[in-house]
Length: 118
Image (cartoon, rainbow, N blue to C red):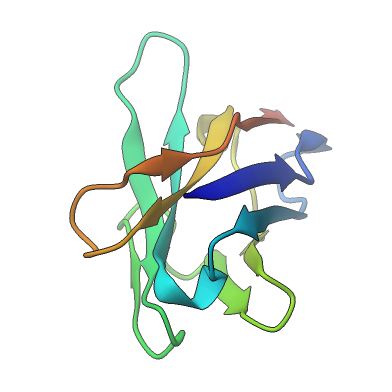
């Protein structure tokens, strides 16, 4: 198993930036495909971005493409997401998640709140 702990959320004005981190412990971090999901109040959870084990492949939801960047440092067992030009509609709880096969995400962090004011 792998344990995931997010940090870096907070309150920011529209147009601002935040960098989320997800620290992993337990089994080898480099053995997992990783992703960031978010869930806003009253809305379904959505996939924001994902990255493969080596970091050579990334995917972004259309809503964040060009503004968010997912990355990982396997030596530090940490997943990141740089979020720029934030919008009020980016307000949500952001979770990192780990997947062995890259399809179903078996392990989840507790989440970090991101609030963007207009």
